[in-house]
Image 1 (tube, helix red, strand yellow):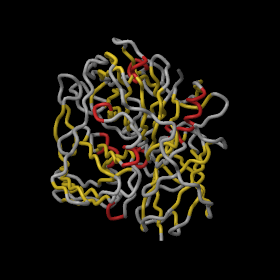
Image 2: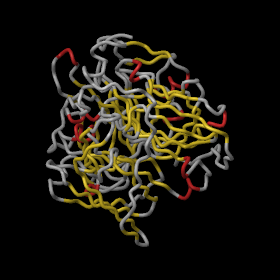
Image 3: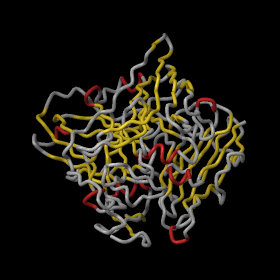
Image 4: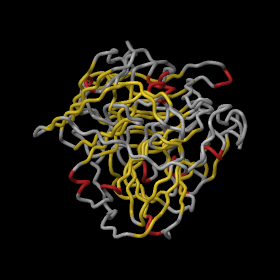
Length: 487
């Protein structure tokens, strides 16, 4: 593998190429050499044996009050310590003392009222990523909760079932706050999904992926825009865990909650997974997936049928992309397969029906770029500008459908693009039709250096000022963010 100054072309299967929209059987990405100081764990960091700890499941937050139309929750943001690395305690920021935060299971069409209490010493803002909410309840980066104060967010949940998540969004602090733990799942269910017969209950498992750097005392080390030293891979808050599964179908709800790391995931035996959903909900049809590609903020809903494996099989979920030494970042978790059991679940051929695309009446162009490491700069831009909270960058007429062309102009650095308020449809990537895994509703899209995507968005819900930004969240904290005003 080559250093950061070099781009390599990584040849994968046809499905993998389609998932990132590259043509010709390859796409450009970056990695670091195995075993070099740039890619290694920080000197003195505790060694961790992979697959030595069981996968924990995030706690489900129960409402303290239920009415005929709404569920009421209370969440306190506070500092605490958790055992992340075996035998060591790590100070983290938490929602209700959990790392990662507790999961809210909401229902489409039923309101969730969440009181967020800030017991930290700095301002916070809670954004429901993927939610369609008015400005007052969006959790924007300048709309913060002061230390010692609280804020009640009301989510009407007027959207299809989907894997959403909450995270801190206080500007200039969001990247460190999320890195240190302020994030959690928000699983939105609906009746149409219930009728499909997908794996459920104990066989519906959340997987929250992220990375971190630890020092020799087990403390998390945060350095802005440091993708290279965050080489401890965690799932649900523990490093390289294992999960005991029965010989039947499981549904996994996966979130990449990393600040910067992209994952390209495959099963160690090369068998296919079946992707059934993305950011905004179910795909029209199941998509065979030899790999899953997830940049920070993206979600994937997929099924693995473990009935195809003999009891005693150990199956590793591998990661095909750096940076970092492959012995660390090249594996994520392990599935330990048990006996076959009865399985009434299914994955139907049709999952949902997406509405017909309206004709766009406005076209816009967005260019993402940031200072390259060699220049010594530390700024990030959309259309040549860094974020200004007082500036409106894009004026949008309510009710219109627009076509946005987004290009990553950076020479060596990947970016992604996230819109608040609206889910979009990806029409094409580098002039080519998108892979089926990208054919559903999305709110975050990955762009490797030089890539271009075309997105279609309809602004017919809430009016007001909302951000769009790179969700490699260190980049947004460095200025790769802008404001749109819907009027």
